[in-house]
Length: 111
Length: 115
Image (cartoon, rainbow over all chains, first blue to last red; front, side):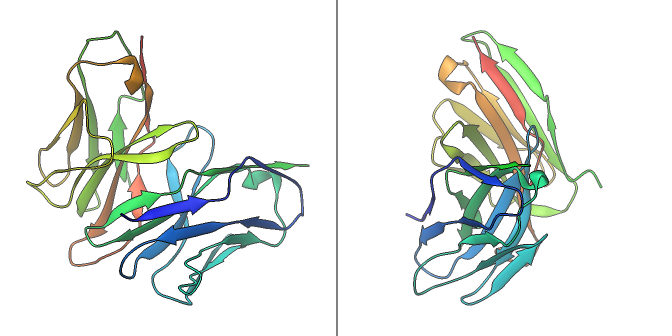
């Protein structure tokens, strides 16, 4: 079945550092790919998405490019802030629109 | 906009008790989902409903039942709670009618503890 694998956390960075969180997927067909963010005590919010190969999703300084050749959707940000501290989930969906999630990566940014 | 509303936000149950988690969405979405979130496990799909009147098992359905009461509401029932069901439960909905592969919108979660 479809699956998503994220880099293991937790990840701790200093403010203004460069961030990469790796995500790879296994799926038949052509899924849509998503990054969700979960702030403490809250539900998940969509951060960005890409619906076809070579699409780049972007939001709040975060970017991810749908790479079909490497089945990847890595999340990047050039300069992180303390407010970016959260848990980040990579996910895919296709067919019956079920979302399949990775295990999540906890990110902590120190001032 | 209310989006996806879950009740209750917190619940403590004794082993063997039953309860129903309620979920409602006001976005006219066809698909609704119940996930559980456990530390280090990400989100695992319990049940989903692709449209009103249909429900299907997800990855971890054992010990749960669901009802898609109408297009807006999707409830999750624990008939006989067990400590292994201690978790945070999230309801989600997605896809306006006629669209595919759109993002899901999540409720705030229900933190359930079974003692």
